[in-house]
Length: 331
Image (tube, rainbow, N blue to C red; front, side, top):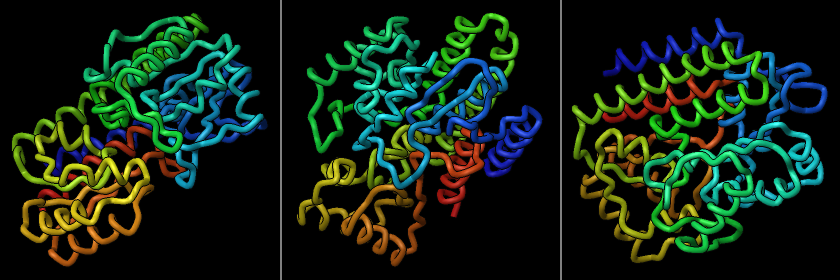
């Protein structure tokens, strides 16, 4: 397993170099592109994909690029509004993750892609709609029916909005980015399709790698401090032994109850979890306590991030995440 994943990471990195997908800040503060299509992504995860697919035919701006910015509670600026109003295409995650974009889209004529709509477990999943207003209405309805509001985070109950860690969902997102760019710039169809095919090949490789982990480690207990790596853990066949309420409290920025924290400590000390999975961008005293307990017990800790690191592509980032999990399970 370790050999296959490492090889995939090397292939992804090589493909990136050959495709010339490095990001260069533009004069307007965006990334890549010349005078072609203008694409705005809520985070650099989707911005990276747009850059890889669009190449020199697009100029991409990612509103959130720093790990110090939390999409759940991000407050958009007047500059953000102007950037969105000038966009040809907007790519959002949806599901309450980056709800700040909905206000910015009011009055915009931009085509919109909402990633969560391609997830198999999204409430009322009906796929991608062409009309941006339909996107906003559909998501608003889902939040009213299923959601709770927590400090600016309109969470859909029972749904993990971190869909960028679900390779199958992201295959459809990549296909739709290529399709939308083609609709806006038909002359670029061949380039968009070829670049999308490269990313899809990577994603299908990640699915295969996770399936292999599933074969080797199905049923292995893992403690997940926050839902971020949930899709990866599920695809790898791992069993979430986190006490109910712990991950939800961490995600929403509320205190973990003393009883839940005690139960979490007991789970780790009992050896029920072979690996601890964390979100490097969230946490507090409770997660620190859990991490320290795991380290004292010799349980490996794998930290995932919500945003790409500087200079990394989506493909490299995903390959690293899966490799890190594989290494921890094998240790």
